Amino acid sequence: MNILAQNQSLKRRVLLISSGILAVLLIVGLVVFSYFYNTIQSELKAKQASYATIATEHSPIETIKETYVYNGDGPYTVVYGQQDHESYYVFVPQKDDLTEDDLKWINTEDGLSKDDMLTIWEEDCDDCQLMSIVPGVVNDEYIWEIIYEDANRMYFQTYFFSDGDLYDSISFRKN
Image (cartoon, rainbow, N blue to C red; front, side, top):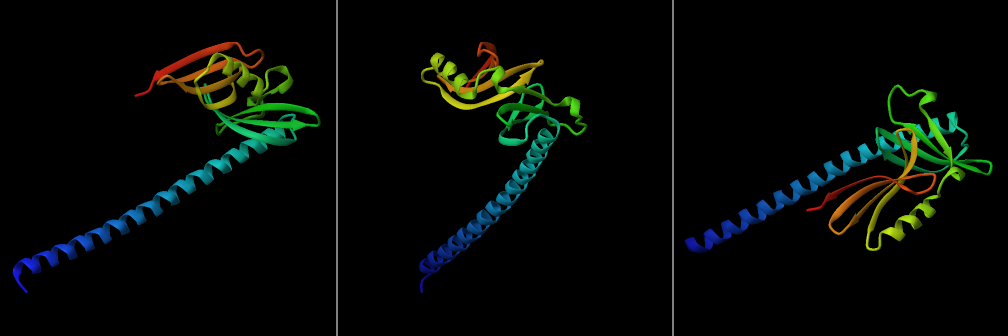
């Protein structure tokens, strides 16, 4: 066998071994990432469940229909629930020294439903891409927060829960 053939054979082996090592490292990296991601998500879900339990113990709701996370002046777990035929949004601040007095709630009949708020928003925004809509509380005002994209901009808008009028708006250009 000549030197050129040996050189090509060696290059193939090195390339094969390098590819194998790279594939193993990639798989190990994905497994480690998945483990940490799932661990973090499990902890977040457990924390959300504990805040939802607090909402059922210290507010009018007895059954939970949906939960949201709202990040306004501080992070809240918002629990949508019912008692008999009444529906409420309960706002539970996500903090360690939580007391019963920290919880706030509002009867859904005192404002616009999620669908009604979306209808109002859609009338003003034709080509927008909705990212999220969550109830919130800012400066003791109940609001709907709508996050959306339009014309290469990201918008964070809040609307009064009671009537859907604009409360505040912030936008950023996307690059």
